[in-house]
Amino acid sequence: MRASNEHGLTLAEVMSAMAILGIAVVLFLNLSGYSSLAAQRSIHAAELRYAAQSELHAAREQIARTGSVPEHQAAPSYTVIYSMNDTAVEQTRETQLQHEAFTLQAVILFDGRPQWLTVTVVQSK
Image (tube, rainbow, N blue to C red; front, top):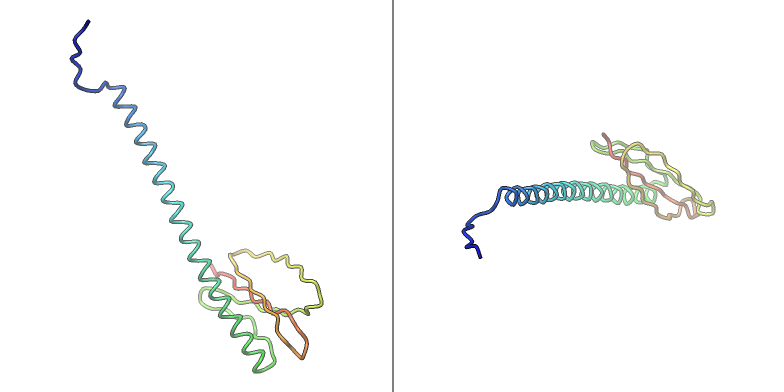
């Protein structure tokens, strides 16, 4: 029997441990970058949703007050597009938007008939 006089690690063991730690660190950094990007997109989507809700509310008030649909308008960070369609007509929407957008719809009474009021908020570049 040989007496074991080893008190350290071999070079191969140290290099293997460093490679495993390096892979773990790279994976962690990638995941944290993705979660940061997801958080930014979530905040951005919430801002667009809030803007669409505000614009829909303002449009409903204007229609009730004046009987007219608001004109399309541009704010510093987004553009608002309004449209109205008869509720009896089937809605098929195929919107080709180049930027991020959020759309809300509501049924309103316009000239005594129910109408779809659609408000789309498009993010400006």
